[in-house]
Length: 435
Image 1 (cartoon, rainbow, N blue to C red):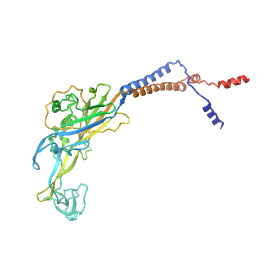
Image 2 (image 1 turned 45 degrees about the horizontal axis):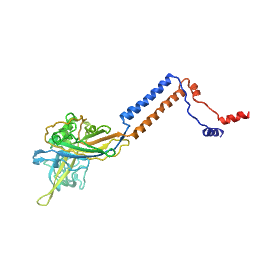
Image 3 (image 1 turned 90 degrees about the vertical axis):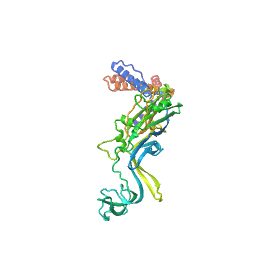
Image 4 (image 1 turned 60 degrees about the vertical axis):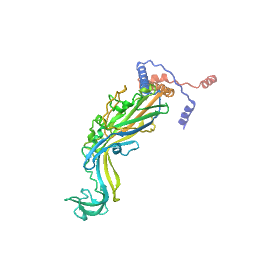
């Protein structure tokens, strides 16, 4: 109990104040300056130069829109001679943050509601009605089983189903791709950015790009790094992949727009750069369900009033449009919208504007994203970081005190010089007078 009272009394009635002790030691002096230099290097090099701690940052409002262009022709026994334009291979015409370009297809024409044999596999091949269960429907079946075993062809029987007949046979995707000419289609990408705090806006179609140049240019990382029109075949080729191979089963490409704007400099140096990467990696050893595909149907009525449909299993390249920013921590939410235009005809290159080169990589399935960051000088973050840096310099003193007072051979001598105990002056003066 007495010990607790002594500790409490010491806590309440004692006061400690720093004491400056000059220690003439080469080791301690060099160590102190080395720690201070490291702290200064961190504050100046990392905080101010690399991280631009003197700037205030702002989140971006971004809009991106997409449009595809291109024309090709096919001549098959199923469809005959047919011209394909944007309205045929861009499905759907408008989609939120995505754009799909069909490159291959399996088409089943003139389907009607009725009864027909199922495609043969280990669950549908039969010898009699006893092998078929009425009302059953598997995950991969095309309809509802009727319980009857019927001829599929001259040598094989399968269970009959109630379905859209004839049923689709999608066991093999067409090779080469049905719309292999999509390699020459192009994409026009329009991106607008706005920083509300700085009242700064810009678009990826730069001021020195003319209408004549825009109609004739195609993006090239060296010669035309700021042309917003991208040829699909060139994108995939730049990634080290074959467009014709990708077009058979579809894929996913990523196109990234990178804005790195320092608004302390002239706005003409705030430029976009483009990079591409494949998002659906193709692993030869683990390649189950590759590519990208979906089904849709076109319905019509026969003269007799019977409903018919044409079923299409579409393979292709989907452009996922994802716009996000990297501004400060935590990252603020962003909104976006992208514009791409595709054109199948070859274009003569016009004069390239004198701009800095852009960065380019590439892979399958097209995905658009924008990394948006902008900063401008502001006195408040500058003073905050300067104050933080000065406070960090105190770490050098604390570290040196720990080493001097607890680690060095003469620690007891230094500790004696560092700490001095002084009694209350009035109390000591009163005791002397009593004597």
